Length: 352
Ligand code: MRU
Image (cartoon, rainbow, N blue to C red; front, side):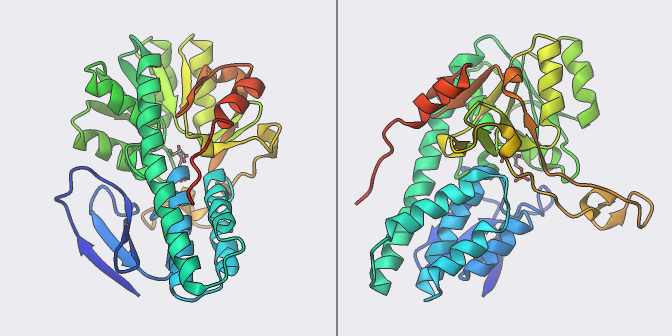
């Protein structure tokens, strides 16, 4: 069942929540910035659909949504393993989704009673959500310190409150630096094809009173070369053990441009985005999305009907272009094979 309502009053935005009556409520991101529509659902299949359609998107947020999806499945008496398989299949690149599903399945390993499984999955999903928000605030603090005198920043896609449990990763760093009065302006790549930069990041920044300027993706290089950008900062969908970073398509050229112009390129991500099981970024699965996302905008064709098009949703930035990776447990720098392991193996809170 799905009910919809409009709410424009909430200032401290949390893009998804578990409702006491056993439903999930989320902000439909496909409609932003034109409409703030909240959707309430009680069927995990609709969570899977929302992830596929990018109504909820961003690596940490799809992990949280997946965890809430399992809680819905248990509440409805659905097969939890089958629900996990369906949720897992929705988007392949962001490791946070598998990470969250595995953590939830592990939490109910050995439990048999329907009620205890339901209660445990709900508690685990809420814990994942709360921990993500707390991690983002810590990322924000570490990142703001790292930025130092970098006052003009450039970001790509949306790694904000909308992509996480709340507060954001790259935008969490920017929010934290802004709270300290140290952000002059944020340049926002529009982020073709689905415009997460102009639709979502600019919306978030304006909402928080942070000065921002939207530019087309192809303009970023000129701004970087003219020394108008002090630092580039993005989020990540998956980080391999050697520090190669998968993120929204267009991140790799940005990193190369930053590197060629001696501008730092920072990645902000929780440790749940680090996949130590993959030696390098070559092993990261890259999602291929429908060609229509490239050849049309909001169903309006912008290319000849039937023309060939390809739509890889992510690219991989080799570690040599990454100045530092900001996590909740500290800032990792090269050699990443050692430092990412160190930030990842810090004690994770275990809930009984
Ligand atoms: O396709 P999307 O919108 O889910 O892509 C999102 C990104 O690439 C983000 O930069 C990434 O998930 C990090 S979000 C904190």
